[in-house]
Length: 212
Image (tube, rainbow, N blue to C red; front, side, top):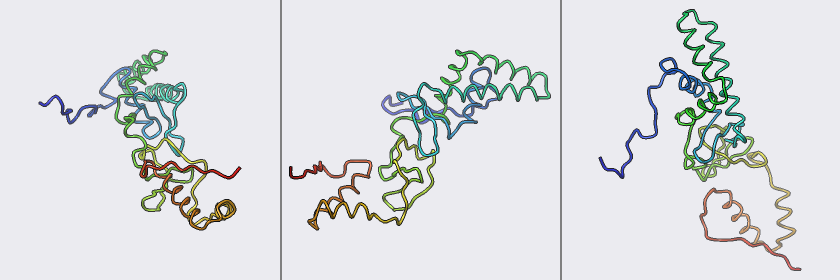
């Protein structure tokens, strides 16, 4: 094998079933099943939580820790309703092994490596044409919008929603008042539109000045 070519399955975990494994791994797999699309770990950037619009950094891992505690609690509740004494005892013991701060950290450490709960930093904000807003994600390449979804892996969002077809009367009034030359406002509008794209397309640095 060529040492410079990564193994095709590197970084992935397949065939893991919660009921086959025990202790912290079992609870971590349950956590992944319950929190996929709501919880995400990025190496070097830590845990993120889905806030309905984007993946937001989880300060102090509060959301992640609460999610792990919830997974432990749900496992104990499920164990109490199991008919098989052996299954009930096994799940009870597995949940109990995670009821300490060390156990919770262990669940999160294992969860951080599971595909359903993890992504690499170079997988975030990849598409430069996706402009994320509170009201939906605008595809600048097509002009179409779609609901904000975890699978876009966006971590940024504008301060206001995009409303298709809305007028820009205030913006146009501002341009007319500050830039009376007809050609300059048109150029500035193109520059502003270009700035919405998430990558450098033109080596320019707009500098707006006014007479003293």
